[in-house]
Image (cartoon, one colour):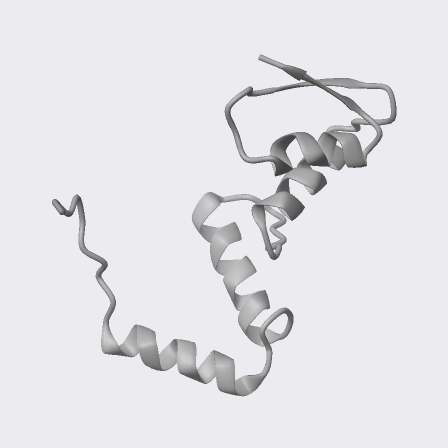
Length: 97
């Protein structure tokens, strides 16, 4: 196998992950708030909300765009199923492109 890149994981990264796991704050809490603040600062956007999956992010994105029942949303033909599923969950119709 030819590697394109090697992960750059420091011992301090591993220790930080252990600290978060041991804290029990896996989905909310100070670590998530700090991460959201860092992302907002880095991207220079006012608001940021991290979510648990790409499916959740796609769902929120379509809600923010105002997709409603009956709307047609163009989705790629070759993609993960969640791309079309979130359209259907909102009552929209997916059109393959």
